Image (tube, rainbow over all chains, first blue to last red; front, side):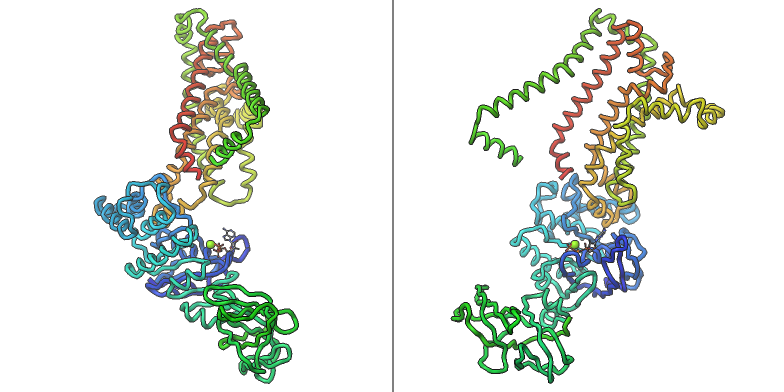
Length: 345
Length: 289
Ligand SMILES: Nc1ncnc2c1ncn2[C@@H]1O[C@H](COP(=O)(O)OP(=O)(O)OP(=O)(O)O)[C@@H](O)[C@H]1O
Ligand SMILES: [Mg+2]
């Protein structure tokens, strides 16, 4: 099902947690809400679920206005960060809960409920554990039960709040892959919240980057990574280096020297240059940036060095081949092959 | 658990004789204290009650006044405890699951009966429903007697016992938060289903615990009830009042016989409470986790 968030604003006691947020979620896609802590991800997810009501704006499920509907009427599946499994119920009872509480007219017969719950248990690869209680399962297993429980009601939209937040890195990676498989198999429109960019980039069809109660950018992982539209997104997704520069004569200048980067679209005056450390090339040319190495460390197969550029003590990071002889105080000339200019803040 | 382990290891590393001495002194002191304050009087009650033989002991219960007192006590508890369960559930639900103005004040208010002398609690109702008040004569004109009758006794008992259930549930519910309820709602459950299938099972042992304490106090309350009851023999005397009246009439055996029944109630409560803690200790702990 499509979900359309239209100009939604949410205040808690006058504190605005979301400002005028609009987002179109496509049917069947897996979209990530990514952003730093406090940026409003959970709030947006809970608004879609109907666990919170917007201060202003509307939320559409397909063509119907869901804003005034209660959480029960929205038919969503919600997976909570801390599972929220019913501790006094067995795994099977947990998964069947959503079907058992239906009014008699729409409730499947007991045998059918059991069959469906067992099927879901199989889907989340926990067959044989149906008689256990939640506190007899590991964190990863509990999270899978929580997902099965949410899927049992055949939700129109599946909403997950940091589903793997409480798990260790190894289990996270496994579950991530597994969630993608489940999504591809069941085809539910899925929104998940994370503040782990690696998770968002790897798992989602599209991602929605949020900051301070606003949406900064929405796009495919490649779009967002390769073409960030704001300094925040550039800085937040992936590694980045940033430098204050001046635009003059349609060119970028650093410390009184043109560095060989054209800037025809950027207005003359101060600006900020962003680039990725791995996009920096060492070059021997006058039109380049020059810096002095102040620190260096090994990152995977490359060496990342910190350079002081210009006279004002600004530091940027660039990647070198790991066997590059540069040491402390070495002077290097370089130029990024991809970059982005933003007007000075 | 962790601290216990650490403590044990610590003791093994440096088993200083001073700490052991201090330990035994403290244990000895508390045992002595409990012996004098709790066990001795309890022994005295049963000893005194059975002093003139088992026949006299049981004869005390055959008295119509004693039976009326027992019946009244049971009736009062049967009304006050369920009402306080409902009140306690509602209050702790509101406090634990909602944000509202005056919440801190409500919590303080719930504690009020603990800090107010029971006599004052009784007097409040005398002021409210007495002959000189507005409400008393008004209700009387409709034939409803509050003071010196069952309603007054029930009201005073409710007042004195209402913190027990709420105090037990508030921390439990606050600790559990609203996650489980939200999960139930998101799965399509309505309010009642959520309450009976999710909330109630999560708090059932805490609730039972609160009910036990509430009941023990409801049956044993003296001060507040003494003020509002009027002590009409065979009509408005509860067991504790009856005990006092018998004692004042130098009928020690009957007084202690009845008192032993109250003491027995206390013991049963204690045993049940310990049984709850022992049998469902991990479940209560799980609920609190
Ligand atoms: N119930 C609430 N009452 C008051 N303020 C709230 C409430 N819920 C959220 N907020 C505020 O709204 C803002 C956004 O919160 P939200 O929980 O949506 O952030 P988040 O992006 O999910 O962060 P995190 O990654 O830490 O979970 C925060 O500043 C938070 O303090
Ligand atoms: Mg959050």
